[in-house]
Image 1 (spheres, one colour):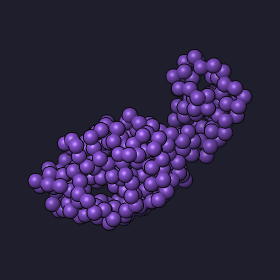
Image 2 (cartoon, rainbow, N blue to C red):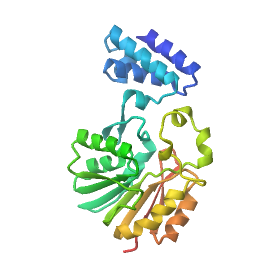
Image 3 (spheres, one colour):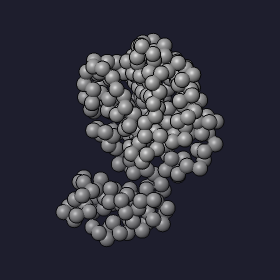
Image 4 (cartoon, helix red, strand yellow):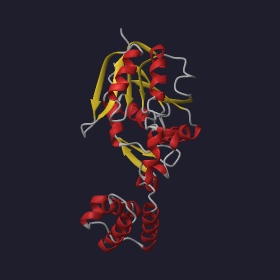
Length: 275
């Protein structure tokens, strides 16, 4: 088993993968239907020929810089597991902060905008059992993935999905609105890692010339869809806090706060409609 991992590590390192050993271990564990600790410790049984063939195929896909999450087809987010494929952006650990900072009374109504795989909406449903969640996205493909995740998790009765370009098709008010909008500057996309530029949907990344086009639109729309005291929480790029704060204050939000991720980077901006 170690020989398999060593050879895969060399193949991935030669392809420019940043974490070749880790990725080889994760892919072998997936091929064997076990966990990485069992593979690393040597406690897992020897892989079958079929599992080795599947692993070799996965390594070649990773060498082409396909993300591990797409190869495995699943990824963990907060306390839930999500199916992901090339129709949706892969949920990042940093986005978990968006769930953590969404402070609402119970029961409550929450709208998740640009839901993608449904990661934020479904994590909120998991952690706030009294909440009613609505999730919207402009992409029908993304909504198909999110609905399937909701069914798998047993949340399809508590989370509703609809197609909407931001809040254009929304006609309700909520206690909180969350959004992980595209915020990469258009000119920066070509310079991102091959895992992103070759495989992830560009529409889920491109935030316009300064990365904040959709933030401006949503900030202007959101107050009409929030109850007094209602909260808007946005994921942002790590250099976008000052500009985003100005946008939110200009739209009438109070109590504007910047929240940092575990790496100490500005990652989420929140504000409230004055009560």
